[in-house]
Length: 517
Ligand code: GLC
Figure 1 (tube, rainbow, N blue to C red):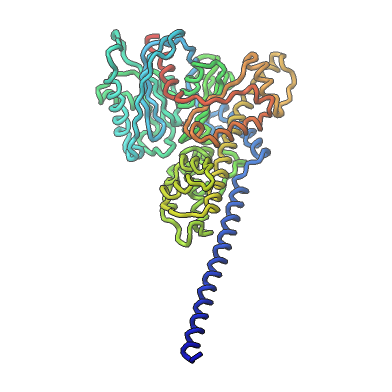
Figure 2 (cartoon, helix red, strand yellow):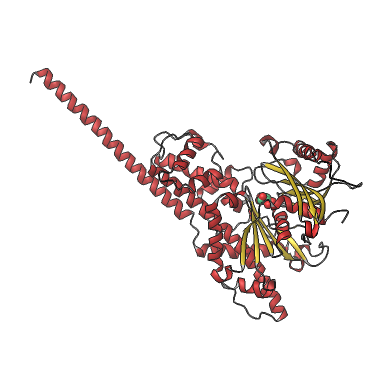
C-alpha cells in the first residue's frame, strides 16, 4: 500500500470510529433519557396515588367540613350554600317554561312544555350558544346583554301554540357559580370560577343583572328560580325518581348538592322559611384537606390560575384542569428526559392547549400501536413522530392523573353519603329505632335502607361531560364508590348519569315557583 492510500485508510477508520463513537454516545444518552423518563413517571405514580387509607381520610374530612360549613358562615372552605329549594318537582308541573343554563364556555336556552302527571314533558326545544372568550373576562353589562339577546332570539322562535293569556313568561336560571342566595330567585355572586373573571359582577344580585339586561333587550320575562347546576340536576332527576338525594357535577367544574334537614343547618336556622328539607349547594370545588395529594404540578397550576388558592378540589380533577395537569406532566418529561427529542416542542408550554377530551382519547386508546395517541400528539402539540414505547408512557401518565381524580371524586360522594348516614343514625337513636350502630364500612346501605328512606335505595345523580364522555373516569368513580362502601352497602346506593338535568331541572323549578301556580 502506498503512503497516500495508507493515510486515506487511516482517516476512514478514524471517521468510522468517530461516527460509531457518536452513535454509541447517542445511544447512551437515549438510554439515560429513557431511564429518567421512567423514573419521572414512577415519581408521578407515587405522588398521585390514592390508596384506600388516604381515601378514607378524605371521606372523613368531607364529613367534618360539611358539618363545619353548616355551623357558621366561613366555618369551612365548603360554603354549604342554602338553595331556598325546599320542595322538589313532583311531576305534576305543567305549562310552558324557559330555562337558561349558564356555567361554562357555552350556555343553553331551553323551552319546555310540561304536561302534568300524565303528560310529563310534552315538548322540549333548546339551543346552545358558545360564549366568546373575551366576554368571560370583559364587562358585566356585555356578558348579560349577550345572554339576554340570545335568549330573546330563542323566545322569538316560540311558534303559535304558546298562548300566554296575559301571563308573563317564566324562566329558571341555572347559574353555576357560587351564589349567596337570599330567596329562590335572588342571590349575590360570591366569586367567579372556571376561568370567568369579571370583578364588577362579584357581590351583585345576578337575577337583577339578568332582568335589567332583558329589559334593555326588550324581553319580557320573569326569573322564577335561580339555581346552581347541582341543584337543578337534583330537581331534574327527582322529577323521574323520588329516591334522588344527592347530585354531583363532574364537568368543566365540579360540585355537589344534597337534601339536608333544615334543623341541621344552625347558621341559617333563623333565616329558614320553614322546617323540613332544604337542598344545600356544597360548592365542593373549594373543598380542601391536607390528606389530598397535592403535587408540585398542582401547585404550579394553581399559582398560574386566575384564582390562586381557591377551588383546590376542583383543580385536582375537573374537566377544566385535567388536561392541563397532563400537559404539565408531559412538559416535565420533555424538559428533563427529552421525551420528544432534544428540542422541547413549543406547544407543550401553552397553558390549556391539551383538553380533557384529548386525555380521554389517549387514555382509552386500545389500538395496538396507539394510533389515537399519535393523532392527539400531532394535532395538539405538532409532535409528528414518537415511538410506541413513548406513547405507552404517555397513556400511563393519563391514567395516573385521571385515576387520582376519579378516586377523589368518589371519596367526596361517599363523604356525602356518610353525612346523610350520620344524620340517620342520630335520628334513629333519638327515635329509639336504630340503637348503637357501627359506622364502619358496610353499614351505610343498611342504615339508609332501614331507616332513612323506608327501605328504598339512595340515588346519586351525576351530570357533566367528564363523567359522561370519559368512560374510564366514570368506571373508576363507580368502582371506587363500591370499594369504599363495601359490596353489600353499595347495593343500596345507585349512582346514575342524569343527562341535561341542569337545564330541565331549572324549568321544573320555575314551574314549581311560578306566579301562576
Ligand atoms: C364550579 C362552580 C359551581 C358549579 C360547578 C360545576 O365549581 O363554582 O357553582 O356547580 O363549577 O359546574
